[in-house]
Image (tube, rainbow, N blue to C red; front, side):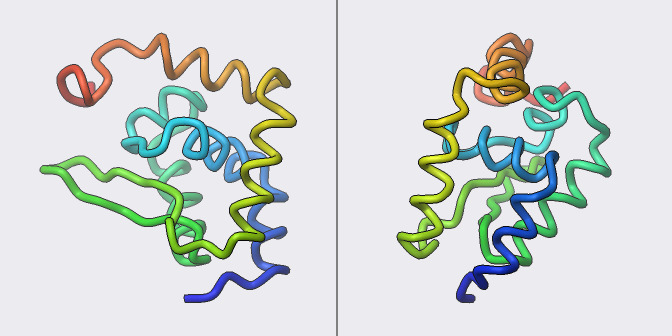
Length: 117
């Protein structure tokens, strides 16, 4: 599904979706539990925002057992990837993005190590 320019900017205008996208751009693929921990938000709220991003053509999903993993769609047009990449580069040290990454790195029992808590 092609990404609509106006829809992309509407999705980026929401802080939760932007923060989730920046984590995904930085990390590659994350489980819902990792995003919940890093953003300090409830699972239903995170899942709702991720569903909007998926429906908008920005994300792909992968199920591993009971866990759902998200990543930025590799088929995203270059212009959209460039926006995400430059937003990440320009804001890596800015709040709340640096705190989100620090919280993710400090998360105990990340799925790679064991399973979601």
